[in-house]
Image (cartoon, rainbow, N blue to C red; front, side):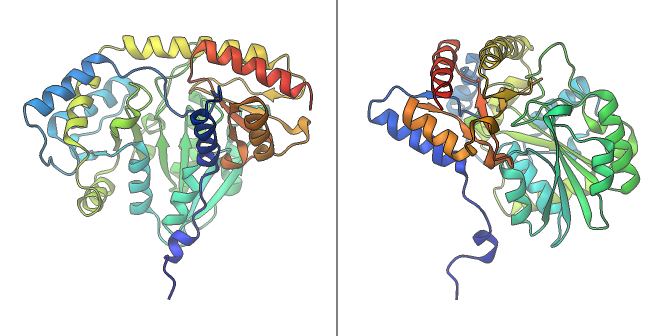
Length: 388
């Protein structure tokens, strides 16, 4: 009898962890490593949020809460959905979980049966297909091109919907490409999914990190039909630099949310009580912090792409949100793993191979680090690429 279940035997390890681990090892040996691998803001969590967590500990708010989150936090999330996203979710339609990743996994576990297909635009965040595999579903990738900003078109979507299609995972702004779907594009996707009865898991975790005056739009806001088919996922990791606090949440149809509640009853129970208090503080803050952070990220993006523009063997698509640049390295003749490993070993710059995101001719550069680090890292990349 096998020691490891068939379910887990099919799950691939993350190559992102391999590069990150190697970078940390070099740093521990005294090397000056520039890291463009981070998937989290480099800003500190605001002090007001930290103080609320400290007060929660001092007042002994350290016991179990309701599985789906405290009534106070869910009321604030409901208000946030209405204010920011034009979405009316009652508190009974909201589940607070241990991060947006947990929220997405919960939604898939509740929706997907063995053999159901889940549409995933490619490039994609590394965990989407593995989550679908864990649910014994089938990831069906929709390939996109830098020519249209790595976004699926209505034609792409219609061509890939089959009788087995259960859901579409939509991520805007996107990791790894930074693409942002506009009003007209989302309206068409909503129309098609509504007509075909395809659920949408809308991952909106980067909604506050958006550039060029663009406005984030939630697909569930396009009328009752798509609202009833959408699970809207968000969290505080990116918008308030709270990655380690592990607070994500979702809003959705009551029957799906009730099933997710039962699932969470028997898996994690409630998210950490202290983190929930911190989340309440975050959701009562003005938008000054997130606006300042987005402004700084936009400055870093502009500098980084200005430098990449001068590198003949690298092409990129200008990200409209998040804090990543997805770079085409096919002209170097290297695959993404070789490119990333050699750059780390020879120039001590860490970035993520595109194979992790479904594109082996690309690498992902994160600009969630200081301008000084970006300047030095770009100097090293430019020098190294010129000698390939």
